[in-house]
Every structure is written in C-alpha cells, then in structure tokens.
Length: 116
Picture 1 (cartoon, helix red, strand yellow):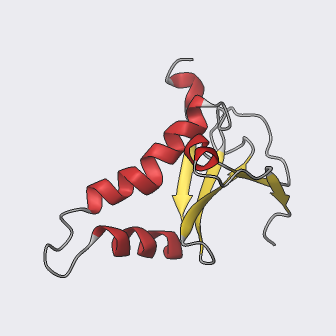
Picture 2 (spheres, helix red, strand yellow):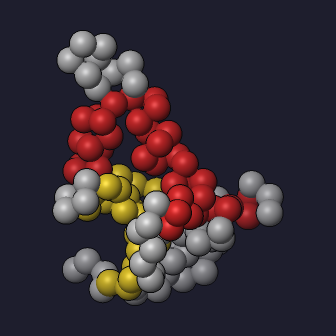
C-alpha cells in the first residue's frame, strides 16, 4: 500500500485534545512529554488502524475521549473526507487499534448513528 492509498483525515474533539494535554504536561516539567503522549495515545493507535486496513482512502476519523475508561476512541466516517473518494455512508464505526486487543480490550466493532 502506498502513501497515496492511505490518505485520511482525522479530527480530535475538544475533550480528546484536553486529555492529550493533561497526559503530556506536568507541573514540574511543563509540556516536555507532550510529544510522547501524542505518540502513545494518537499516533501509534492510528498507525495500527492503518496497518490493519481499518482506515481506508478518504476516511474521516474522529478521535473522542471515552471518559469511563480514560482512553481515546476512534470513530470512522467511511470515505468521503477527501475529494475523489466514494460517497460517505451514514454510519460511523468505532475502531479498536491492534494494541488495545492485546491489552485485553477485545470488543467487536460498534456502529453508531451519525450526529444530527
């Protein structure tokens, strides 16, 4: 798969951004560990989703915070985020990065209705 075949768009909700800032900042060191927090909670899971072909050309991935478990969740709006991609479907699909499966969070992909 080439880089052109795996182009997608992602957006983080305000809660997800706040979570990343909270995880990456420390009163003593400031935002010194922000890069590591972004890699651990955002980049690595997105890489796993790409590697397992759960993200396709033109997908829009929304990153939200699941407050109950204090983890980021990734919702895919199938195709349509990029010009030339297939028309968007009406459902979003929650995706589980491979690393989460190994951590014991094995759950089926859930579908949810689109936001109004």
